[in-house]
Image (cartoon, rainbow, N blue to C red; front, side, top):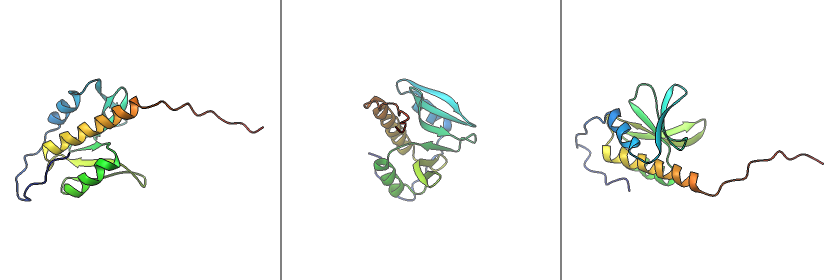
Length: 131
């Protein structure tokens, strides 16, 4: 659960990237690694959060079931993260984000990645020849 929305006028203290890092790194088997010119948090090599160099936003890779409610409840600091025309996750503005919501989203992203990683393994795609 992402937490209940409170009054629109509640003052929010800017969330520091170091707080995000400390929280993400508290999960089992998480590493922080480069990802092109970004940084990333990974579990067993699989990315669940990326961080642009400015560290003012984070990109959280959650499923649609978590994305849609977050977008509806917190449009003041969450927006869709696109890769081409496809929505892959959420862009979270740390300056105006509520810490409990960010922590919840990071937890969901971690859980989603662990669940996908633990699922049944797909057989490698074999090139099928004609004939």
